Length: 240
Image: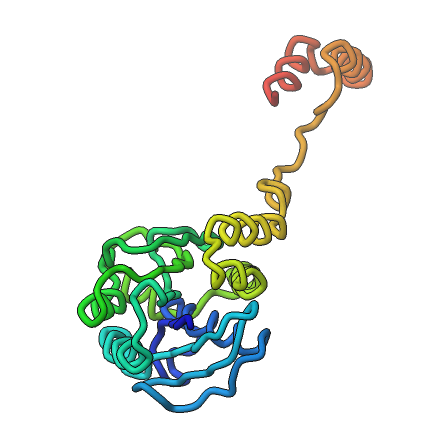
């Protein structure tokens, strides 16, 4: 059996927060697979079923983020699970939005949810980190993580959640490398090529040879007797 934990804060006030992307991922798994419905259990909301033929229990702690370990620890003890049977899905400041990483064990990186889980079950559990990006300044972090995703970010969030749900059978089966490769490919393939949307307008004369531009300048000189050829050429070629 696998315990899959989505981290977040309970209540409608926090639903769209970046800090709640773990809850969002858990909800997506319930909708996609034979899991659910949600019910109150282990100081949180749980949904049981199977993914890829593997029995799983989904858990969204209702203890608020900094006490997440209480709910996780209770479920682990009840089912006599090893930490390696636990997968925690959570937000990662140090990854750009649209990036995701999987690893087992490691530090908490300042994440209060992980700090609490470490204290209750140790560090040998699996982590699925979903990037939310960093605001750039330490004093902006709290407002960033407890703020909702911007409208422009929502399509990327949707791609990440869909990729995680679609390829979760691989991760449940213990195939972390293939999960990472396929999920990252799905998210990246849906993104437009960099620079296309914001490409600057072409400069006047772009794509023309120097000879063609010189000929145009001479024609312009004939039509504009008050302008000297040297001046016209300088104006034209200074744009390149």
